[in-house]
Length: 216
Ligand code: E4P
Image 1: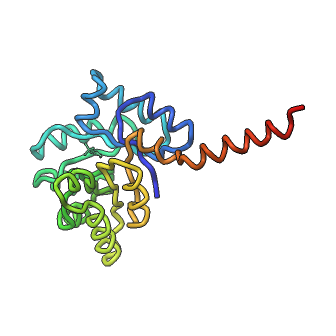
Image 2 (image 1 turned 120 degrees about the horizontal axis):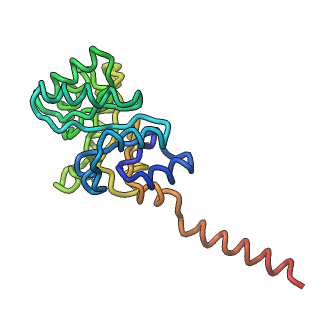
């Protein structure tokens, strides 16, 4: 399974990339706003250069012509850019047109298997089901990942399942079990995956035993 980083913070992307843990990046308007980005195009290019994978850059327009105009500008920025388009009627139409032009897309704000199927039929490269936001509303987000996996396998659909809105490390291991193609993780979750208290306890014991055995 690929790990994408779900952030617009360049320092986090560079640090995780140095560890070899970044297969791509997802951003959204909220994440961009959080970093107070002023020059969006330059920032997207910087993210592309900081790591080797796809970078999802989201359109703001919600009408077909506006989405297409923004999408073409974004796609021209860098070969690693994937245009992120919301699951709305004009968004689906745009995904079809972009796909026909060979431009990669990520259909975002997916909350049902039916929406995932429609996005896949439109030619989306990725669909992004939001696990955490479903959990927040007492729906089982991971069940949706399993359901989409089964359906895509039934019909040999190549659209990749990009599990989004991941809140903690257990979500990540559950995504691996469920067969998500990609999980996009906040930096804190990536670092959380590295850690286990027994690793720290075990290492402290090894070092203490070594010190005891070698001191005069
Ligand atoms: C990524 O593509 C999504 O925009 C993101 O994972 C949403 O996460 P949130 O629900 O924590 O805002």
